[in-house]
Image (cartoon, one colour):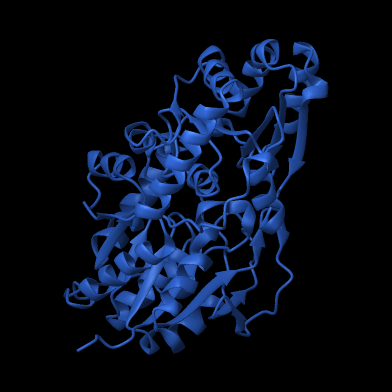
Length: 400
């Protein structure tokens, strides 16, 4: 006898593409809906310094799910959206389980509070906020916020979901719950013929932030050009930290300004096209909770060069699905040169990468495991609610 469908509510600060991994929640919800579940999403309008152009407080159909947006107010950093609170109070009992995304955010605080008061189980997913790298930023403020709110929010969760073993290890080292590791899923569009690859095209996809390591990749570019005269680096991602102009200045100093193109945020089919036409995708990150760009590249058989800051680097190495290198310009350049100079190696890495994604990171498999986690959460008894501050005065000091 098959199990009954679930009613699931996802609460997230934003679905804007600029936020990378968390924004992939819509893809998870689509896969959960395809399994017969009723899925809704509650999110705010925040999109960096802007607001998404969407109806406010009215559900819209998106990927087979009902999505309701709430207007973000000041302070914007924690995605403060007061209108979310009464909506949650009214609707929370319509769902079997909540899936709460992120830490140090107003939607997280509001949804966990209301869920506990209503005795509705929730699954909490930090999305990398508990990694060593992220907690090194504003550590005193985060420690205080965790003491007051987030440790309890995580402790009272029916389950905690981490994106990778590395993320869970970092969390455990600081006394957070053990949780369950379920990686993000990755769509697998049909691969394109190798002739579609642009010779020498190196792609970097991700936010232009210090942790992503695009500066290391740029320093490697002159070395790559020596062996591959056609080499050209395409950098795709939002520049919320103002790093773009620094990269342009450094490229001029290195004599490769004509080999660097900053594309800005790339989404949808344009992003797929970039992944499919690149000869190699490089991911020189210091730290990630997962590294979705890597699996997206492997899904279309584009070979990857990654550092050990990518949590799945061991799987990439073990399955010969890419090259794992030290996080230095010379090592990064050597890895890229190997792929650009050896078509047979590039094809073999690409094929192995797709097989790895299909076996471990397909949305069908990830949705199955997440649904299993929800059903397990329903069988767990939540702690009884204790005294809280009134929800109208919930703090909203965001820290990233």
